Picture 1: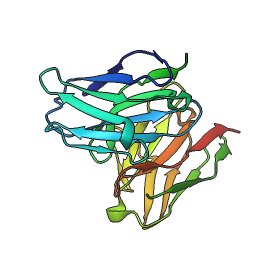
Picture 2: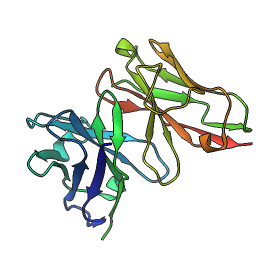
Picture 3: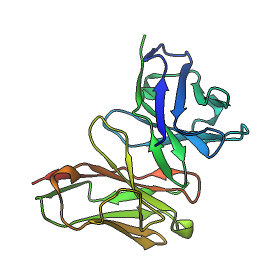
Picture 4: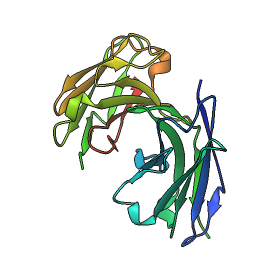
Length: 115
Length: 107
């Protein structure tokens, strides 16, 4: 069964760029859309955006100006960059497969924004 | 943007009881493209229901979904100890938005 795993720095300074990578196992990123979703501690879920194998992306309008997603089919990975972070971006970041809706999720990566 | 509202915020029940969770959308959800997820502390959400009423793979039949338009319901017919968790609805007919969640805790 498909497995996803997030990786990246757990601590990012304010105004810097948050970077995460999701590695997919037992499945190919060449099919389906792949998404990033985040969850601040004790709060609900927020869709950040999605990417397809051909590089097509859709972003949450509230984050669009700061988000970039990319995909590497040779490494079976996709990535998230979020620029100019603030404390409000502190959250657990999940990657997920979009199969109308999200059927496989990573275990989540806590990213804290702090100096 | 479609805004989802879930009620109640918390549902306190005993094992064996029936749980009824509500999800209301600010506008009609096209083609019943609504899902339900279960989330336990420290875990990722788990897909339970898609297309408003279809159980995902491996989900027990005590979980059922219903509804259309703007009003949707998740029913757990008889609560098992492992069902105490937070439940989120999500629409995927117009971009993607999640409800704020309903916590089902032990009475």
